Length: 92
Image 1 (cartoon, rainbow, N blue to C red):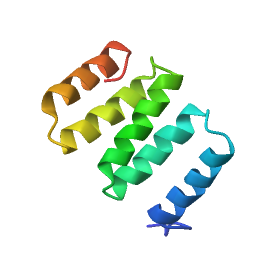
Image 2: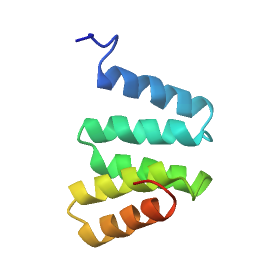
Image 3: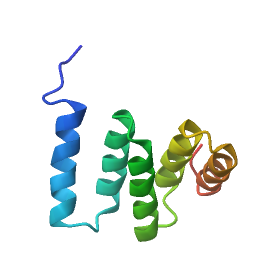
Image 4: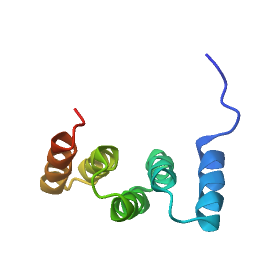
């Protein structure tokens, strides 16, 4: 097994800095959301996925990740809707 060069927290800090420099890249918001989710900061992760969807509303990956976080927050009906949108857009 390979040892990561830096921890999830370290990667999150790098992404946060990158987004401060240029807040428009969709995948940076998705990666930031994933990092926050892994750190247990689910509300912040959800905000990131929603931000990515404002930039690119038809991105299935962002809808799927949003669904995963909503599910973890016990917001089942919203999670189902997000997963359905991801599936409609071609994921899954």
